[in-house]
Image 1 (cartoon, rainbow, N blue to C red):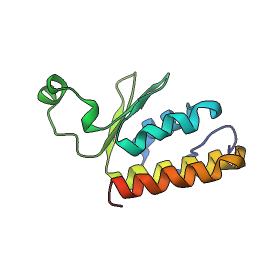
Image 2 (cartoon, rainbow, N blue to C red; image 1 turned 120 degrees about the horizontal axis):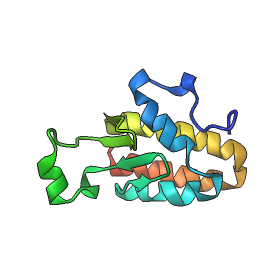
Image 3 (tube, one colour; image 1 turned 135 degrees about the vertical axis):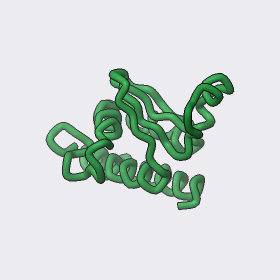
Image 4 (cartoon, helix red, strand yellow; image 1 turned 180 degrees about the horizontal axis):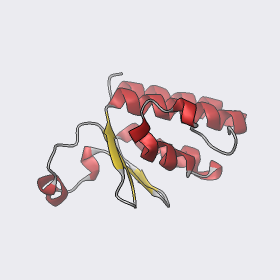
Length: 125
């Protein structure tokens, strides 16, 4: 992990993407593979600071109460800060987080490759 973090400032594509950085950086090493494995199925996850959600994570009430359709992946912090990114941008950050994770846990390199490939296939990237 780079300086204790999976995603650094230099990895960020936009300033308002901070929720993505905070959420990926808060996944502990021992839970990283388990946590990101759900992404292959378009299922988000929550961590101490916030959550990553896909449209199919929302129930009908949540969908109806939104001002916009969730087209992509939403990263939201418990302080209300959130950002929605398209699947290509989501994949960019996931790939960067996986690369950093593999630096710390090289034995999981193949697992991350399988997950990344599955995400590419699922979202037609």
